[in-house]
Structure formats: C-alpha cells, structure tokens
Image (cartoon, rainbow, N blue to C red; front, side):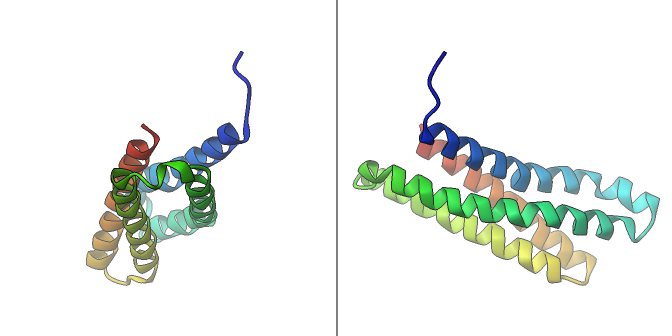
Length: 134
C-alpha cells in the first residue's frame, strides 16, 4: 500500500471541497425545475441550505489552494505554470464573486446569469486545477 503524506491530505481536502462547491452547484442547478414544481419557496430554501455547506467548502478551497501554491513552490518559476495558476486564480475569484452576486440577485434573470457565471467559472477553475496537477 502507498504511504499517506501531507500532500495526500492536502489534495484530498482540496478535492472534497471542490466536489462540494462545483458538484453542488451543478446538482442544485439541475434540480431547480423540479424544486419549482414543489412550490415557489422550495428552490430558495434548498439554496439557503446548500449555502451553509457551499461557502465553508469555498473557504476550504481557498485555504488549501494557498497551501497547494506553497507546496508547489519549485514549479512556480515555470512560465506555463504561472500562467495556468493565474487563470485558475481569476476563475476562482469570478466563481466566488458571481456566487455572492447570485445570493443578492432578486430577479430570475439575474439569478440565472450569476448562477451560470459561477458554475461555469467553477468548472473552468477545476479544469485549470487538473492542468496544474498534471
């Protein structure tokens, strides 16, 4: 059996938090039509409950992301790594900011816009994270 290390723990926690943040957004978005059929207040109630899990996961993502950057300091001199990391950081920022704006939105249009931006940027950040790990 392979040995556990702090690198294993760091990446595991980061991936679990990403699963909650990204996967939760995709799942909730897919459920919205069904939730609406159950009552107009149901999607909002589900979203509020999701946020109680999602925002702590986002905080863990940011903290473990900083830990990842520190752990991979030897690769940071590579220009391709720096560019990829920069794009990922922008996508993480966009995902968090647009999720926050989604929380504040009052019209269905802005809920849809900010939800889509948050979900797509979260997927993009995940893709660039995989690039960094490869």
